[in-house]
Image (tube, rainbow, N blue to C red; front, side, top):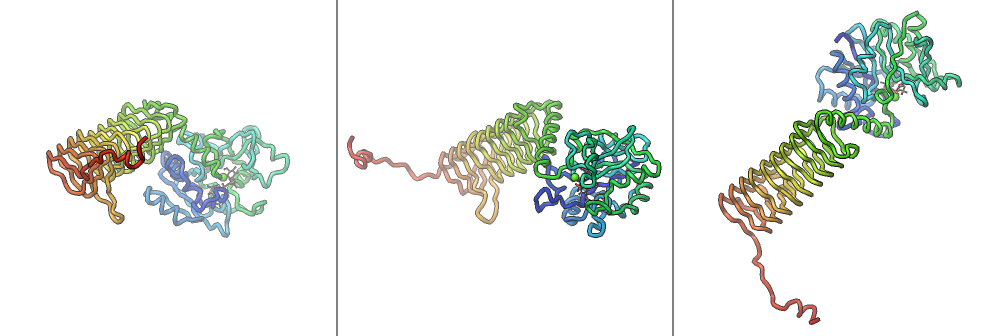
Length: 430
Ligand code: UD1
Ligand code: CA
């Protein structure tokens, strides 16, 4: 891996209209910047991220996930622009790949294509019917002559349909030579990285255009772009899991986090949302269920079930309108309308309709432990902390606020009474 990577992430991202730095916005559960870093990590062991706006916040996020990323602080007040961003950056290897932090869809293969060959500079070029917003790339005989930013284009140059995708692989020695020579004599009074192309051409260096797909190289600048990139990422994620054997009914309606994983034979029905680093093995997730950071094995969920973080379902059936949170259920049936939070429930236990674990007293959360083969009658409240041992039967409508021992029946109900002919006394005879 003899190439260095520099990721430009110092810009403010004004067009996102957000207080969160642009590059921290997420696509399929992972920030745009992390998508770029992960692609870069596959080709390089020397990655530098350039920061300025909200630098501390972004650096902290990166350091929490990666331990070998280097940082460079741009002096954006004095040297604004993508060229300013490169001022003072030192890289380890003889070739340096520069990419933008707002390109979450780039893949390892495209990065490799950009680093191959022996031109002094390879740069990414997209052919677009509508080049609006991009720097125009002036190409003659398959050689790049210069990049002209939209705001600096002549009316003739505006029609150029080859645009700069913003990724360059440059001989590091040339970069070190050209960056100090950049000026801000242009429409935006910024230091444009793109000006190194013209400098190289003037010195007789070769600048080779590498044509790339818009779908992969489109920069995300607005919430509209973000949504569009999400769609593309979702299509990729789902295509690859379907190839791996996951069955999806109406995949267009399904959402899958980039961190989620599947094993064996899984079936996802329409409208399912699989979030976080969920791990699903040989299971059936029925329509409109939501799974968040959960482990589900040989189980079925839904329709309209919700399995929240830190839950483990093993050989378990979760029916409609059942919410499970931070609980481990092994060999359990919970068919209808329940909340099971901070609970451990064991093999052979049946949870009736409307059972609620009362796990929170307004200050703290408490555990509910239910053993094997327990029959929990409908509409039972399990007031935690509480332990129900094996082979227990709980009568419907009970409030269980004391532990129940093995083999017992627990019932807590106001005895029912009937009043003869009350209806007729109240409403009168018909
Ligand atoms: C840039 C290119 C343009 C290209 C387009 C592709 C320049 C001068 N223009 O324009 O030719 O078509 O990308 O998407 O390079 N950044 C910094 N510091 C800064 C300014 C920007 O680090 O002072 C970073 C941003 O965080 C971003 C990247 O550089 O990740 C690109 O910046 P952006 O402002 O989006 O550049 P464009 O105007 O889109
Ligand atoms: Ca951009």
